[in-house]
Image (tube, rainbow, N blue to C red):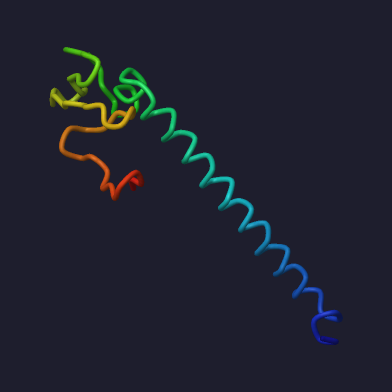
Length: 96
């Protein structure tokens, strides 16, 4: 314990680890917030995917065209929007 209290680099290392951990938690929270907003509506999800033109839209699905010319289909699943064929895995009410 004496070694830890007498050597400054130990305190700097511990402070650096705490700051790094705090930054990781902040980054994870930011990512969760962005994904929550992106999946919340069709227009948000289309923008998130990089759609340039929305070609069709209904309450449960829609298609759009990307800048590359590729057409993608998006579907609503449990109140959230996803790419068709790329739905989350669910066990009961819990989805990943």
